[in-house]
Amino acid sequence: IYRRDLEMTEASRTVLSNNLEYLLVIDRLVSSLPHRYTLVNNTYAPPKLEGNKARYGIGLNEMEIEFFSDRKIAFTTSEFHISTIFTPQEPDIVKKEEFKSLRAESEEAESCVFIQIVKYGDSGKLPAIETRNNSTAEMLALEITGGEWTDRYYEGKIDDGFVKTDGSNLYLRFQNGVLKDVILIGATFLEVDGKLVFEAKNRKNLLRSKEPCNT
Image (tube, rainbow, N blue to C red):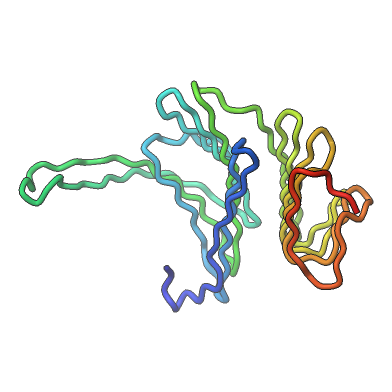
């Protein structure tokens, strides 16, 4: 919930996952006024921040969050605690919980997109997933690879020579080089590697999964 004087027109979160191999979390914030937007992660475990990555160790488990944005972002960390009482009858028994806070703050702008790639693994072993940032001034473009699959996520003016569409958002999964899954928002066409995968007279959303995509 935002104050009316902030003039927010969109505050949305989209979470994508394919077989729960990782989470792709997309936060989109839009206003008619310029703001410094802040993404906050509060955890019990302290983050180990290296560049745009934060790693968390929780017991024998491990989690890593990789941050991307269409704006310049700066990171800060802090600590805080929350005190609670168990029952009104025992106000002297207070439970104090410590939290660590990681904040990613954007430069001042009317809109901002935060993207988090969340990887997690048991016994302190993260999955072998690599991310490549192919973004430009007009397009967010991420390539996520793990084993035999490669995911591509785009938004903005989507045209990188391999993929082209007039849609606003696009997710693709390739399995052993074969296009398997597509999520496309508000498009009349989609070209992949020089081939027309989708075409429509009016802008449509497209969801195709499991089967190879053909013209």
